[in-house]
Length: 201
Image 1 (cartoon, rainbow, N blue to C red):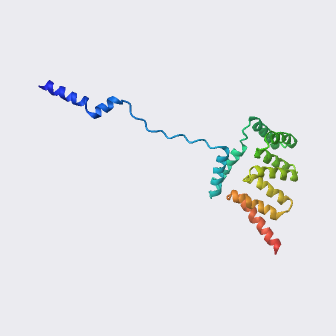
Image 2 (cartoon, rainbow, N blue to C red; image 1 turned 90 degrees about the horizontal axis):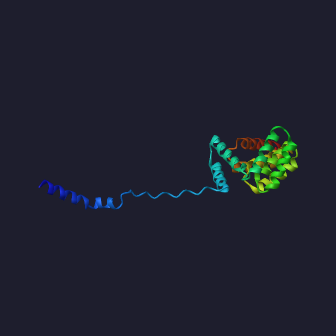
Image 3 (cartoon, one colour; image 1 turned 180 degrees about the horizontal axis):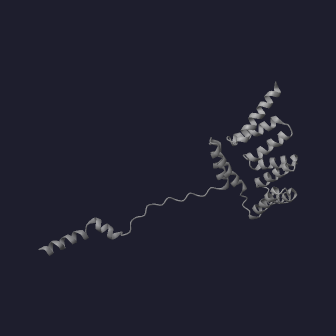
């Protein structure tokens, strides 16, 4: 009798829906995997970073964001240009300005749409006191990247050198529209505003 009961129990288990389902599909069903997010383009990364920079009100956090923007700006997409930019920086650090200028001339010829090539050469011209040439390169930089707060700061400094305070103030104000927590631009706006107010009296 016990053997008959055991046989009936085993039969019921084998044909129960739950056991049958496991028998049909012994492997657990995988959860649907989320599709991987497409990697952002260079321009999309910059757009996101500039949005963050404009919203951020913590100075240290803003500096980190601006650093990431500079990293994006420095990416030329060309190993040859990156190499020449590195050589130019070394020559500038060593005050070998003519050597640096040769490298940067080659950079802007190889890729005239690379904003940082023009901006770096603008900086070099400023260091060499070639303010007219520096301004021309700044204008080219801003045509390619209107949000280039580094180029705008360079423009402001050239205006200060020429004692054109109103234009310098305007350039620093443009910097703050893009990078509100730029401490140097904040200080310069305050100082220039006071000077211009004093001169108007």
